Length: 255
Image (cartoon, rainbow, N blue to C red):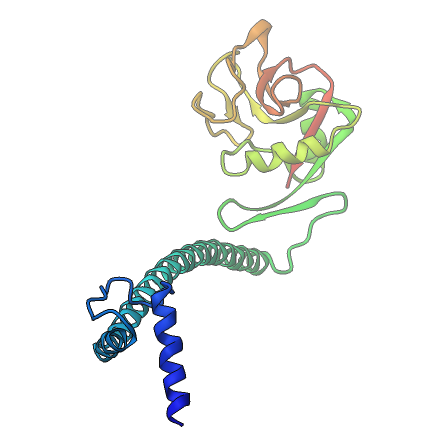
């Protein structure tokens, strides 16, 4: 048993002698020459706890390094989460706006239906109904081209008149006109003047101001005695224009 222990010490001493680094590189051998002195020095070094101290320091450095890495990773992930949340909030607001717009549209449609529940129009006429602008029946004549006065007579025979130009619904009929083009491209409407170029009135006698937003650029000008109003397709995309009353054109009736 003693021999075995002695052999272990001998091996350890030999390892230290040939410079194997096991954590004692900073220690200097100061013992007497020979194995007994080296064994004493070795015993003193072992009892000092040098190895445990170095290991603790290394572990602390390792833990601090890992903590720093983990913190950076956490910071990056936190930034990504914040960006994701902001995107979700933005999308949710956009979605909320779409939902609200859809609800408003449904409510408006229901109001329109309720406003004109049971409304009917004569054969050949369509219903226009708006809580803001009123309700009436109308029809486009795009194949039987007529002068302004002849067109008005047709509408009156149906119990109505030419369509009264109104800022409230002009855009609606402007868009409809684009879909109703036929043999006749332009459409007579219910406005005229006895003094070409000014003082235009509707067929109901109400004045049509020059500030009316749907006049074509530079109109009315009364050029060559133009005194009847039309929705003109050429160059103006159905904005309002004064034109020669005897020209054969399409027309819009209103009841």
